Length: 537
Image 1 (tube, rainbow, N blue to C red):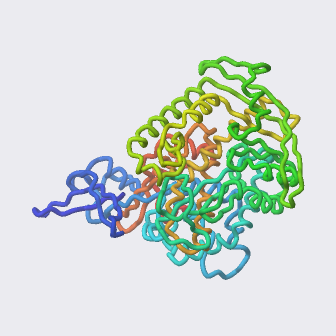
Image 2 (cartoon, helix red, strand yellow):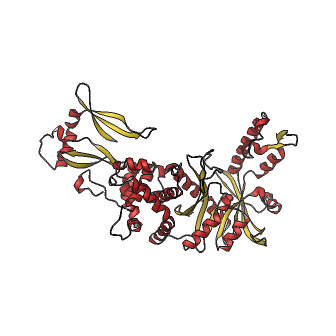
C-alpha cells in the first residue's frame, strides 16, 4: 500500500491510499482503497505538520511547503523479526562462507525467499517484482532467486544437518519421540516425469501430477528432516528409505517413531527393530487376527474413564506377529497392543457409516454408474453378483457396526504404560497440524517450478519457513496460531517519504501480536520516525 496524489479535472490534488496488485495477466494495477481528502488540507493538518517538523528536527512553527513533501509509500519490515531467528543459526556465514569475492549474496536471496514465504506467498517472479515493497531487498535480482534455489537443492541435506546440530545443541533439546507422516503436493500440470507422477492425492486434486512428501518432526512439533518421493509412491514404502538416510546423517540412536496406520506393515516394523528404533503405530483392527479380535470384543479387563465426552476405556495385550522377511525367512515379533473404545469415536464412526450407506443406496438407483467407481465412498457397501446385479452388502455393514468406537495401537515398547502409549499416539495431531500450516498457511502448493532442481529448492524454502514459523509460535508460548502470526508480520510496516529531499521512514501502527513478538524476541522497536540514512535495515 502507498499514498498517491491524483489531480482532478478541476486541477485539485487529492490524497488516496492505494494498494498494488497483479491481475490474471500478471500486470501490476492499482486499487484505490479510500481518500484522505484534498492534498492541501491533508498536509496542513497540525498532526502532519508536527510530523514534518519532527522529521526535519525543527522546533519552529514554520509551515512546510507542499511541493517539498513527496508521496508516501508503505513498505514491509516484518522480516526484521525473522532475521533474529535466522542469525541464531548463523545462516549468513553458512551460505556465504569466507569467500572474499562472490557473484551475489546467496544468504540474502535465501533469507528473502524464506521470510517472504512466511509473510506473503508468491511465485519467484512475483517475489522479484515486488521486492522493493520489502525493506533491504532492492538489489536482489530474479537470477539471484533462481540460482539460490539451485544452491538450496544441492545443499539440502547439509542444511538439515546444520539445523539439527544447531537446534539440538544450541537449544539444549533432545530427540526421543519423533512423528512421521506423508502428504502429497500437487502441480498445476499434467506432464509426468521422474518425480512428478499421477497418484492418490491427499488434497483431492484429480488430474494433476504430484510428489509425495515425507516429514519427520520432534515431539515439540519442530521439523527434523523431510524427503520427497515420486507422486505414485505408496505411504508404507517411504518410511524405511527415509529413516536409513536420517540415521546415517544424524546422531539418532534410540528413538521411538510414532506414525499412522499407513506405514504399519510387518516388514516395516521388523526393519525398525533391526535399525534400533522403537515404534508406536496404529493397528488395522479389521485386518487383525481372530485371536486379537476375540480379546478386543471381550469386555473383561478394560479400564474405564468417564468424562464429559462419554465413556473411554482401554486394555493392554501382548501379541506375537509372524512374518517373512525379504529373504523369505519366517520371523516373529512380539508387541504391546493397546485397544481403546470411546463413545465419541463410536458416534463419529456411526455417522460415517450411515453417510456411506445413503450414498450406496443412491448409487443402486443408477447401476450403470457403479462399475467405473473404486471401492472408496458409497461403493464400499455395494456387492455384485456374477449377473452384474448390485445390492447392499449387509454382511459388511454389520461387521463395520461391530468395530464402531474401537481403535488399536501397536508398540514395540515394553516399558511404556498404556497411558503413555496412548498419549504419544494422540500427539500425532502435531504432524497433521504441520502439514496444515505448510499447505494452507505457508501455501506450499501448488508448485509452479518444472525442473527437479528448482522443485527441490522450493521445498527447502518451505522447510525453512515452517521451522521459523514454529519458532515464532514458541516465542508466544503456542497461544497464537500460525495464521495470526503471519498477519502480525504483515502489519509491521513503514511509510517511506521525503521532506525537502531528505528520506524518512514513519513507523505505522502494528497489531498487538507484532508487539509481543518484538518483546519476546528481544528486538528493539524502531523509532516512530527515522531518517533513512540512520535506519538499520
